Length: 616
Image 1 (cartoon, helix red, strand yellow):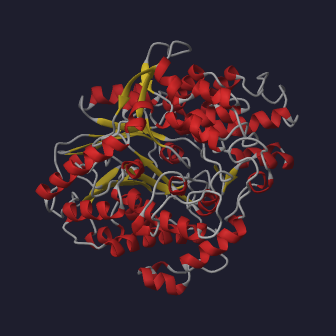
Image 2 (cartoon, rainbow, N blue to C red; image 1 turned 180 degrees about the horizontal axis):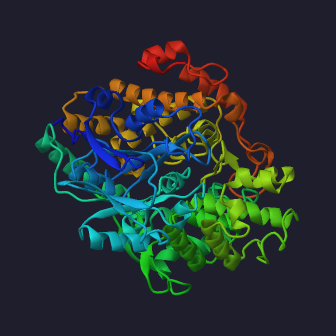
């Protein structure tokens, strides 16, 4: 058995109702590490440019990394990858909790699912074997119900990943949820719809195996040393979670308000931020496996359909998207909307974005009560927001229009509506404004899954993180222009490594550097990698994902931002007048990457990275 890996991948063909095991390709593991990096190899090789994301030929990949299931801090994560039904390009979800760890304990590094079952099924993976079981009795139930029912049918300590009604109804931003009431989501690009298209309701996993490590004693000593420092530096996140930064983001001009139009909203931000949550509805922290931070929130709300139930609370992105983006300043309403999204299996970011888009269309008279079946989609209308979440998940009424994402909805409503559709490549913006951090403009434009702050995470380097190994001895000027293309490329490569090792990026706030990551990896695998070799792997992974998108037709024409972000000065807040000069930064980015001016990796770059076999 290779160090750090279980050495096996599970294959599932739902059409043939067949499962089999294949040995992990150790050369591929060394080349792409694991997680979304290794998954990129399989997605590239097993799908085509013309693959229908909701067809049986799309492959749905669940992949762990060498850190998953070890004591490396903040490593309880796994990746979910497929061709995205929302964007038609690279689709990737990164999720915490305990499911990935339990998959490795069951004896597998990953699961690759193809085909479509004739009737709803779920897969039960355990140490003694794999079963494809009927799930007709689970179809139509939410993810929390499914979690309880499958545990009763399999093992009380099994961990379940499942879709809700949104995935069943092929909502194009449906998510895959795990960890029951704690609500951890593979959240972007509609991977839940891919699962629903295969009639796959859930995958349950349980086992007791452990990966063998190259130097367990060295790993334990180094982890003990680092864990205390990480915990000390992230006390604020432990106390208030990601939501604790909401008011600070508003002050910086980073918080998206009123569908990205408004620059400041201090009173509203104070009403829905992490501090207010801690004073009112917060009951405890939640830790993913191996986490030393504990940023997850558990809350108890006293209104609506699920009053009194304690469940995972809203993160910063959720509060921003279902709160500030819609001008909803009712914390309990946003928490309840988060509850609905977790149960139905909806991406809270895309859901809030779709509703905010609809509210702006309502404001300008592009839709009326006749379109919405009497629902008044006015700014700040929390009840309308809550009802629309349900309608999207069920594809009812106007929810059918929004269920395909803001780009498709804008095209359905009419040309003027596209002015209010804030997305890149069809993926709605997360809750960080490129007008507050210039590097984020480049990151959103070039992220392989569409608008995404996590695939670059550059805002951290313009706010409170330095990284000497990347050439950044101090925090960068967020309104600076020169060097932002280079910064974005370097950070994207580094984030590919986080996503392949399966390590939480919040570790950066705890002082984790590249050298620490390499040291952990060498303890786990025995590889003896250098920092230079390690970073080259990240570059290889990012370029392979880009090649996948190029094959799907992506080029510089798609690496852009909505007009509102490039031309509209908000006039208030912490970034009142800044507009990111994307063209200049993008050209620098392409040059640094060794790509053509059209954004295509050159043959020389592919040879350098050992990717010649994937060139057209």
